[in-house]
Image (tube, rainbow, N blue to C red; front, side, top):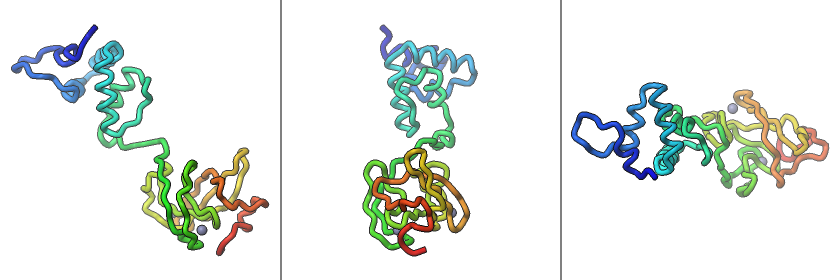
Length: 188
Ligand SMILES: [Zn+2]
Ligand SMILES: [Zn+2]
């Protein structure tokens, strides 16, 4: 059974012995071969694997708990910029005053609230990923179509920049039975 020293020691540098940190070991992985060897070590060594998972989590990188050593090492090696790129939605559920009809809207719970349940308008605040708040636009999103997939989804278009995207309708939404966006409640 290998303990913590198994990866704390390793190939000793010529400099005086001092604990080799995980960061230092990652920084030393400059070739594919070195990455592969380290990944195999991660797969064999539970303590090393746990330490690497903790490091990755501390950097805000999402990985599956059963991720393989090679992918885990690659996640840990991702540059800071890469690590910021998320693909999964960010859970945000906030009360807001509707910018279109003025309704005071409570958080939606699960699923989250991302548009007004009355006039069905939203605001263009997200860019690539739901919840990222990276759009820098802020204009009103109009519902331009409803579709059954089979659950109802709302297709949105931004008034300002013509950005379009689709979200699931919320159970509280007053979706017009006609599924015609002209029948949505509230001001035009
Ligand atoms: Zn509204
Ligand atoms: Zn926009």
